[in-house]
Amino acid sequence: MNIQSKLPKSDVTIFTVMSKLANEYQAINLGQGFPDFDCDENLRQLVTKHLNDGKNQYCPMAGLYDLRYSISQKMNNSYDTNINPDTQICVTAGATQALFTAIAAFVHSGDEVIIIEPAYDSYTPSILLAGGIPKPYRLVYPDYSIDWNEFEKLVSPRTKMIIINTPHNPTGTILKAADLEALENIVADKDIIVLSDEVYEHLIYDNEAHQSVLRFPKLFEQSLAVYSFGKTFHSTGWKMGYCVGPANLITEFKNVHQWNVFSVNSFVQYALAEHLQDPSTYNQLPAFFQKKRDFLAESLNDTPLLPKLSQGTYFQLYNYEAVSDLDDIDFAKYLTKEIGVAAIPLSPFYTDPPKDKVIRLCFAKKETTLAAAAERLKKL
Ligand code: PMP
Ligand code: GLN
Image (cartoon, rainbow, N blue to C red; front, side, top):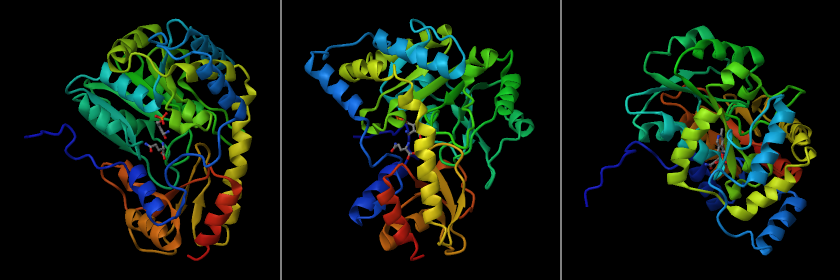
């Protein structure tokens, strides 16, 4: 059969490639972003309770009302906003589906979508499948900041969407209030949607506050913000997330969602609705992960790897130019096979990769795991 791929240039994701290699070589996996510790016992008990309690049939299309209500309370407490659980939230099968649905719903053939590279790897294929044209703005190592005057030059009459991501995977940088204000001015009075990937909203360090689009009322009117329970509650395998936005955008989002997934996992929604009612479940995350970030950084002090301190996410970048001339993909493979620690190279996050000698390590691991990885990396 003659198959005409819609994504002819697409490779297997780097996360799958590196995890497979890590398993093959029994390397400690600091590559793909997932915790090696279990999620909260209370949450697991709630899931079990609702599973055994017969919560096993379809939920409403936009998500269980109780969960949408708990989400609205969380957002209102965190971002001083007033989210309506009836009209401004849709529960999704993880953030990836929310991103895909948002792009499918609003990007038409020939529309331009500005992305910020290095960019999470699902954005470009999703844009291409919608017939859109990705327009990358490139962040530069080591500070990876956005020059909004330069950024604005990418905006054209065909720009339909801008995708931002804060805290940012893979660089670990965060946007500040001034960044969001600059963006608000750029999109004001234009038919441009801001798709804001905020899956690491609670993984932010050194007492910084997460600058959600929800904090900026004017910007919010043209934004969709995407979240992941997988990242927040250490349960990446459950694939649960949600999208928040103004009612007119969420109505159109749901118009696509209903033909794609219709509704997502029922008993986990019941459990999350209860678990979310306790703000300490997410408010403790900055301290919890900052300790791990600092533990990894200290453990690697004696190695030639040079850290770029993570301001958010559970990733930290390390410069390896003192030890190798290899490009980042080959170096990540060398680390996995020869040193026994898997990492993620940054090249796959770019259309046209720079030559930076930088890799990403995930510190969402037990201290024993991080210590064991550091022992191996000391061989460098
Ligand atoms: N966006 C970013 C920036 C991510 O790092 C990830 C990975 N968690 C996702 C989206 C996808 O999240 P999920 O696993 O909930 O689909
Ligand atoms: N978000 C995770 C990361 O950046 C991986 C998700 C995936 O494997 N698709 O590592």
